[in-house]
Length: 149
Image 1 (cartoon, rainbow, N blue to C red):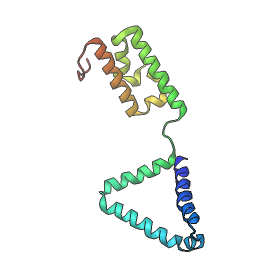
Image 2 (tube, rainbow, N blue to C red):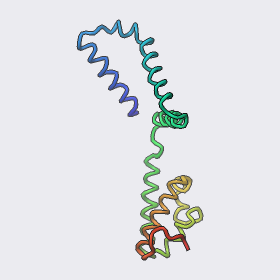
Image 3 (cartoon, rainbow, N blue to C red):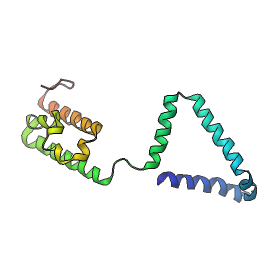
Image 4 (spheres, rainbow, N blue to C red):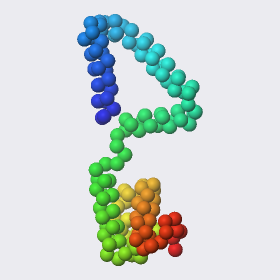
C-alpha cells in the first residue's frame, strides 16, 4: 500500500510541476511509451551491468516482497509479546534453571507449543532462545558464549 502511495506522489509531483510550469500533457502522453522504455531500460541495464547476478536476483526478490505486504500480522505480534511475557514470567518465578529447558529445546517446550506461528519461524525462535538464554545466563553469572550444559 505504501508503495502505491509513493508512486502516486511521484507521478503527481513530476507531472504536476510540468503542467504548472506551462507544459502540455499532450506531448508527454504522445512520447510516454517510448520515453518510459528508454528510461526504464537504461536504469535496469545499468543496474544489471553494475551488480553481480546474485545481487540482481536479491533485488528482484526484494522488489516483489515489497509489494506483497507485511510478513507479520498483528496476531503474530500479539503471540510474540505473549510468548515473551510467559518466558520472562517463568524466568522471574523459577530462575534460569527453570527457563533453560524451554530455551534449549523450544519445539518440545510447553510454553513455546502454545504459539505455533512463532515456533514455525525458525529464525525468530532461534533469536528469542539465544537472547533470553543469554539474559538468563548473565543473571546467573555464566559468561556469554558458554555452550549449553
